[in-house]
Length: 83
Image (cartoon, rainbow, N blue to C red):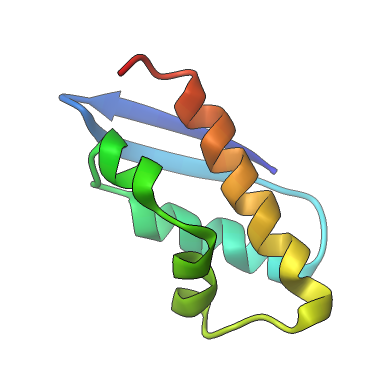
């Protein structure tokens, strides 16, 4: 999964995801963009995997990797932003 975002005035103005994989991975990527759109970079950094799983209504144990994938992509893109 790859995330791209546009930040302005410390807020995430636009965020998009690109993923190839299972339906839960697509769902987690999509919901993640909705959860962080408009948030400050610091608010996005505080998002936890558990928040994503709760917002999506839970994931089967076999699909738990999808939430990790989305959160890893978020962490990676946020590391590229200077505080």
